[in-house]
Image 1: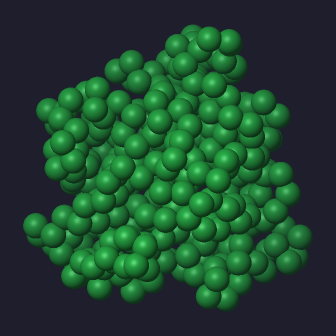
Image 2: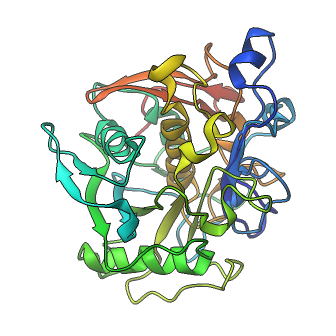
Length: 366
């Protein structure tokens, strides 16, 4: 997450100082990368104090993983507007915001390409979300142990409870390049939420029911600083929230389509190793490690805490991915390559109440 447990958007923090690989070589867990406020501030933000709404990934430099991961299982927050977790098959809509993304094209695999995307993050994001729920992958299984329909404060899900859905056949539900105007140089939380609401309309998801299991990933172009990303006041790699959070910078964004869950996914490679570049793989093979680690981090937190913090967080406000961010490489809970039908991706482990620790794999719970 990245903020106080009561009202925070989770952010993934960024790593700083020694590189993750150097830390691993020395036998130390990598420091957490910048995380979004709710998610990674303590579990999602990576640097500085988290904003209440930033739930997400922090920079790798901000560690504290041993404290985050020690005991302290997640408990259910009781839901916000009746929403705690994503209960159906998760649907991810990618929104490439701004004319700075350049000219659109389509590659031989059918993925949208963009001339303003120097590192190829657009294609990688599509491959990742299209691959979730394929190849009998069990990375997503870790999240399915969580549920809603239980009392606030519950730490387990009884038989018959409604669990987080598994993304069978892929989570990618749509791609939109919004070229109507340039993306702001430093978008506020309100502007990001408003763009997500606009995307819901674009995709025809114009009812609360249509958005119940949807999330809108707002991707900003290189060189921009959404909500202070890659600035001294940022200290995160990404974060997630929902449109109605009144603590968003600029305030909540109205929606005629029901509650809209969204993620602020900046151009992650603009922060290099601070947000996970080469965290798992060396050389060119690891250029986009941080992209898939951070995007996976926010996705896993959204489906287990869709309207923060009504879903699953620990007593300090960390979400499931916050507790395992920049937790080292390999083993049962460290970051490592996970193979989907669309390729191999660097992914981090997430918290499992079942073992009171981080796991990269878990049988799917129905």
